Image 1 (cartoon, rainbow, N blue to C red):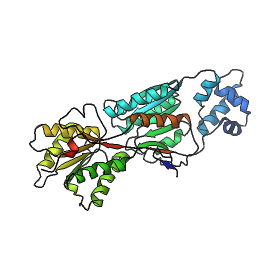
Image 2: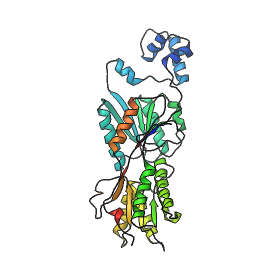
Image 3: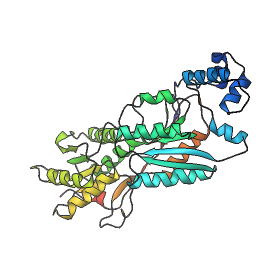
Image 4: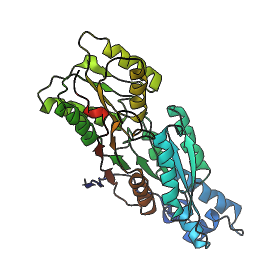
Length: 341
C-alpha cells in the first residue's frame, strides 16, 4: 500500500473491459466493435446485435474522454456528487472542483443527495447513464459495493472512504491527526472534561476525528467519558440542545470538540443563552469564524488542495488504487484557548 500525505494506497479493482475484450467475446473484428461503439453505418444488424450483447455482458463503457479527443474535442464532463450543497464545506468544495476542472477545459455537473443513500445512488446511476466521463463522490455511510458494477466509470472519492470499496481512489483529510490536535490543544489549556459533538460516526472522516480525540485523551491519561459524547446530530439547532444538556450535567464539560462546521455553529447557538464559557474547537473553517468574540478556533485545511488532488487522480487513472491524504492545521482564534471555569 502506498500512502502519502498526500498519500497513495492500493487498489485491487478488476480490469476495465476493452474493445478487444468485446471483440473476442462477440467473435468479431476489433474494427467491427469500433464501428458499433461509434454508431457508424454499414454494420449488419446481426453483428451489431452480437456486439451490443457482448458490451452489455462485459459491462464495457466507451472512454468518452478518448473519444472526444479523437474527434478533436476537448470538453470533458465530470460529475460531482455531494451530501448537501447548502453546507459551506460542500459549496467550497464544488467551487474548488469547478476551478480545478476549468484548467483542463472540463465541465462539472453537481448533485446533492441530502443525507439520503438512495438519492446518492440515483444521482450516480443517472450521471453514469448520461455519459459523464468521470465522477467525484463524497460518499454516504451506506455500502458502496454496488459501484463495482460500474468499474468502467473512473471514480474518485473525496473526504470519506467508501464502505464496501476499499480498493478505490480516495482523497481524504488527515482526520485522525486533526482530531488529536484539537483535543491536545484543549488538554494543554487545562481541560479534562472535554465533550465530543459529532454526526454520523459510520462515516470514515467522523470516525477518524473521534479516534484522534480518544487517542489524545488516552495519551494524556484522561479517562474518556461516554456521557460527554454526542453522536448522530446533523442540525445546528439539535447540537445547541445537546450542548445545553451536557452543560446542565452535575459534572459538565469545560470544553468541546466539534467534528464539523455545523456542530461548531450549534455550539455558538447554545452559548448565546448560557452564562458558561466553555472552550471549543471545530473541525472545518467557516465564514465569519474569525468575527465572533472570541473567534472560533478550528482545524482547517486547503479545500483547493483537496479538489485539485481529486481532479488530478481522475485525469491520470491508474490500475492501482491511490489514497491521497491532505494535511490539516489548527488555527487558534480564542475559543479554544479559554481556561476551565
